Length: 238
Image (cartoon, rainbow, N blue to C red):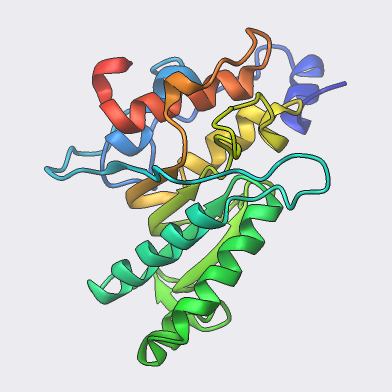
């Protein structure tokens, strides 16, 4: 019945709860400010602020989520936009990039879209090879990865592109179906995803926060709605 080993251990080790007070990964405080406010009770010490847009909202106006019966449960238009952003990042000299899809189906759609893009830019194909390792901060890591929300724990890259995937269907309706985020502990998965970046996050979404109407008890979906608002409007919403 516990969410994690830590939760169960605390029941037999009274007074053992200690918070990590310094966020060591991200180089800009905006990358941790949302989680600090909504998850960590503002206990985290920010890294030194940098003067650039660390969290960017990229709205896919024509994105469609095919999530009905006998449908692939993905958003191919948004996946294509993510692939475009990946190419832009590598063309601009970025050497460390990760893509996090909010579902397994969206991860596969992004892989397909990236595969199509690579055909037009063979000179950058090596950048998209997830098996090629480079040294970063005294450890080996690939310059690129695509993961989904449930398989990204422990990964980090300079730039992270988030692909929400969920959004309006063919009729423009947004339903409260958000896969792993709606599951128990879904807010933790979301928190992991949005804190993987060292330098920058690009949040790609086919819906805006006000199009969502999650129930009060769906903590993961509520947090997603708040994060979309944060990504679009910045710290003023915290």
